[in-house]
Length: 432
Image 1 (tube, rainbow, N blue to C red):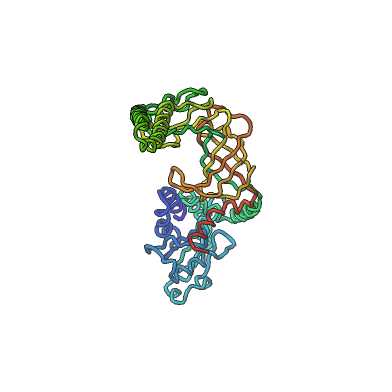
Image 2 (cartoon, one colour; image 1 turned 60 degrees about the horizontal axis):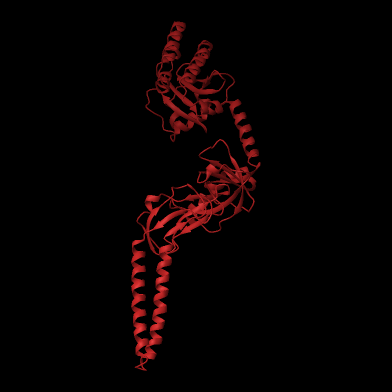
């Protein structure tokens, strides 16, 4: 009878679909085999034990006296996987002792790898005999195997075993030792490849841009016209200055003739001579502007600016930068290190560039200029600007390329490198 019931229960246990239904089955349905009146199922957790299910009880409160007692029973070490006890020897609380059956059986449910999957405490009014223990031992293996197949906490199970705890201690010791390994402190920042000494092209006077004659990043030669200013207003200024000069010269000539007959005209003649000189200067200035409406490139290189259609018809002020002439064979890296990622750096610190155009080929560089004051960026954040010389020659097509730069400082402990930012954020939050 026991054998057939055991086979039936073993089959039904393996048919359970989830851990919750299996826990319910162990404390209720297995009474057909073990003849228990009350059962409790406990499972290990990260710290201690937790009561999962009980016979005819929806749940057992962890903070209750019964829950505390069951956790103590689960921590109890036994010689075998199935051990009968008298309930009194397990020291149940006084207010619960009268309601508990006098005899119990503690079953250790193990995983196939040796770890403890849980413990099942069975209570009944009659003592557990040897035959009960013999039938309970293979069933404990069956229950443990079923829990293993439905286990949703393999990590906790693995480290809950004695062997797993040893490995956990070894891992913790190794991690602590690794924290003392010296590593360079690093920071990541956006980078752009720019010309080392670009030549600026600025507006020679206040006016309006008529046209930009070169495309962005187009090669230019010395003397090549790159920007043309609008001539309409300039021609009007020259015409007005020319007419003004003619009028002042005519007036001066009139006073010269009158000076022979009217002595007082000699004094006015000196004033008009100054007015004529002033009109000549204004005319010369207007002619100079008209001549300089053609802006040329002073050196050979590449024209660097946004888009020529953005400049057409735009009014500009004298000295306003329109574009730069860059030398594509004289490049450097411009780095914007976020203020939140600032690390101590010195000139000559190694830098590794990972450009978006070719991230598989890092480029070595060295810091040559350090920004000591944070400046606003196009993204609306504050950053320190650094410049770095690129080791070796660089492809001229990389002018304007962007990517990520890794800056390296002095060596620090690995533990500090990993905890530096969380510790800084914690200090800012708590104010200590």
